[in-house]
Length: 79
Image (cartoon, rainbow, N blue to C red; front, side):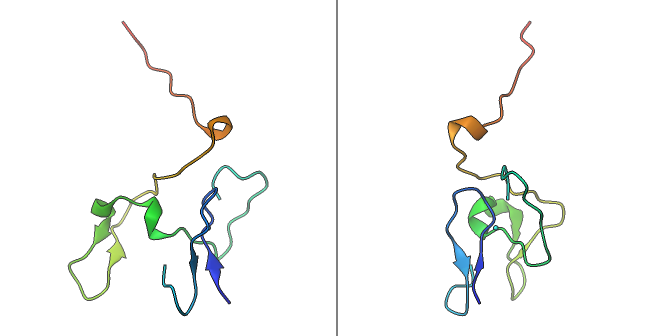
C-alpha cells in the first residue's frame, strides 16, 4: 500500500518502488501514517554522515507550493 505526501498539491508517494503527506488543508488530522516527502525540506536539514540519511533534530519542513489564496501574508514593521 503506497503512502502519499500530505503537503498541499504534492503527488509524491512512497511504495516498494519509490522510497520517497497536510498543510493548509481544512479538517486535516495527522495520523501515525502521515508523512512529508524529502522535497519539503532543505538539503541542509538532512544528516548524511551515517549509512542512512536522516532528518536532523528540530528541523521543520518549509518548502511548499501553495496557491495564492493559501499563502501567508507577512507584515513587516517599517520605520
